[in-house]
Image (cartoon, rainbow, N blue to C red; front, side, top):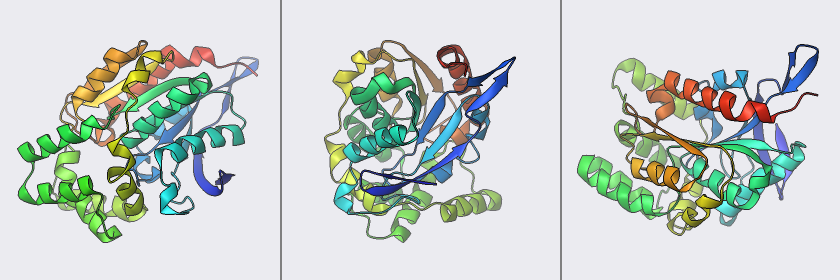
Length: 298
C-alpha cells in the first residue's frame, strides 16, 4: 500500500488486526510503526521475524523514501528530517492518535528524533541496537580494526566515506560484513542460500546509505533530549554489536527516565536473527506490561 505524503508515495504494509473482541466489546491494539535501518534498508528484513508481535500489536512496516518500494525522489531529500516528517504524515494519514515506534539501528535514531519532536503522539518506544549520536561511528571504527579482517576493514571504510557506487558493491559489503553483523553467523550452504534469498528480496538504496554516512549522520545527536522523554521505552542491545556498540544502549538507558534495558548476550547487530525467541518474548512482555492498558475499548 502507498500513502501520498510530503510530495512522495510512501510504501507501508500492515500485519495484524487493529482491534480484537474481548467480552462484549472490541479492544484496540497498539499500532506499531516498524522502522528499518540503513539508511537505505527496507522492511523485508523484518519478515517473518517480527510476525509473532502482531498478536499483541498491529504492525505497520514502512520503507523510507528512496528505499524499498517507496518512491525515490531526489537524493537530496533522503534525510533524517524527512524520514521523521514522513512518519508523522503517515500517522495523520491513517487517522491514528498515538503510535508505538519500533526502530532498529538507523530506525532507532529516526524514532528518537521523532520522540524529540512529537512524543505527545507516542504510546511507547522500542529502540533496537541503535545509538543516540554520531559518536557511535568512531567507536565502530575502533571495533572493526580490532575484530575485522583486512577485507572487512576496507569495506567498512566505504561505509564511513559514504562512497558506494552501485547496488552490487552494497550487496558485497553486507556479505563481507555478515560475520560481524550476525553473532550466530554460519557459512553452511543453507545459510549462504538464506542470505542470498534475503538479499534478492530486499531493495536497498546505496544512495540513501551514502547520504547518511557522508552527510547527516555525522552531525546526528539527540543525547540532550533523552531526559525529556516521558514515554515507556524498551532498549535492546547486542553484547557483541560492532556498529552500534553496547555502550550506546547503556547511555540511553541512563538518560531516558522510564526506560528498561535488555542486553542480548548472544547477539551482535542482528538480534532479531541471533536470538529471535528472546526478542519476541522481550518485546511482547514490554507491550503487555507497559502499553496495552493505554488502549481503549471501542
